[in-house]
Image (cartoon, rainbow, N blue to C red; front, side):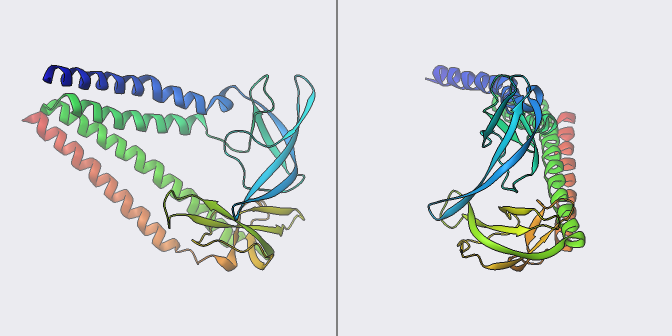
Length: 289
């Protein structure tokens, strides 16, 4: 019985190793195939559609572009990748598609090769820790796992703090340089939280930018738990004149606590460094013994 259990555990260990060495890079290559192999052309948003389903609204961009190889005009919605949740008719966007299949295209910024590479490295590092500890329990293996875990923690924390810093920088630009104007509430966009009470509704608004574009989009920085009425209520919109897709519903948002956010980021950075130092110290101690 123990021989069978040992064989099963060894099989699972090798399966996990194959997933780490082959599976994770394969998924990363799959996610970045448009960025690596795709053809990029300029397209134009012809329409911003607002569709309603089960008391929630969705924003869909209809894009027109020309395939330079076949010289055929393609009109449709993005079929893959991150779908933009804001736009205006006449907006110029970057369209990327694989050769021979222009009907499946992506619009706007997508997953970059660098982001996918860092995420893959993080997953492979965490997986390596798990694999080492499942097969070996000697001090050298535990020390190696401690160093790998510290590296994974540092990498993950750096990515998280960088993302938070980017969002804070956007909020600061919007607060300091944004232009305030009227807009209308036209619906609510649901983000499924996976459990009762975990759903978030974001307002869908329509407003005129400084340049005269009629923007329709979802404000992802504002949310509540019960939804927003699609009654055309007038709300206050703050947007950047240089980038009208960066906007916020001022009259529905709570004031952002920039000092609290900065303090949280600093505490998180210090805690991350302390954890990394503790893990590496434990590893060195076990190795010396």
